Length: 305
Image (cartoon, rainbow, N blue to C red; front, side, top):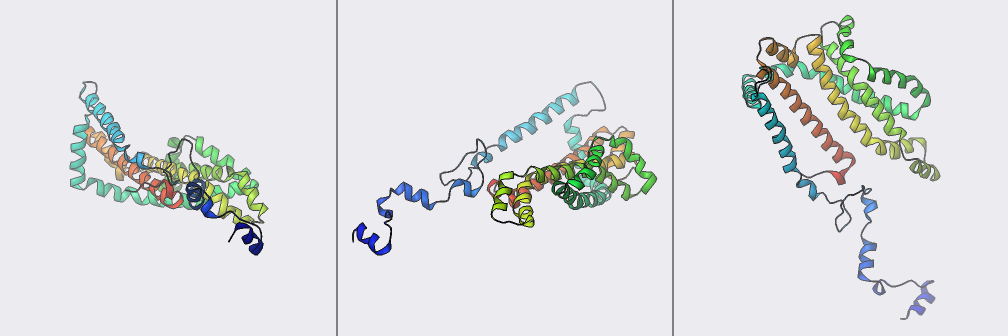
């Protein structure tokens, strides 16, 4: 059957797949890279169009080398006869193991973590919600933006002791300190994420008669997810700072009590071990949150491990 006969029976003539080059057929059958996620500038792609993440597996030696470099410099500086209050890392590591074996960290974090978790939970729900509403409503933005800017620039270390006038020496004061430091960061990041939504995507949604709710849930929130999770990570970091400041300035309990007590008896190795435990816990928490973000919103960026 000729191509002309085909066109007479079925209408307009169409080129047969056999006449097309094999490469063209393969390109037409395989989805384009843009359909699998936007290509970042300078990002490497595999032959099938997916982002190539194999190079990330080769980055761990550099990460280990950075830790070795910092800890080695700490060890050398600690052995240099400058100050007795700065012990070498080897002594801090021994003290860390001793305190962990004795249960000091467990008892301390049993007091420190509940106010921290409550404060972060409140900020994660109400802070993100307020930031989204500020991004959607000009009226709420005019009311909330000045307050968030003032809280972000205020000398928090001087304000935290004032919380005792309202809540006394209680876990509520610690929770308030966590919210005070974390809320402005989370709210402003969520607000910026909504406000920086690509206008062309919103115009496209409106051209297809999309409702306001569809614009928010289908375009704005997915587009702002990166900024929102970045704000949550920064807010968790600020929350750790807030709870430790509250324990140092308001009530000597928890991990703050370990720091204050060991400093008062000149056990600087244990003092630095307590500080090191805070850094380790915060680092692990932020790394897990980063993995959660990649799994939920950017599966093509998730690193299998």
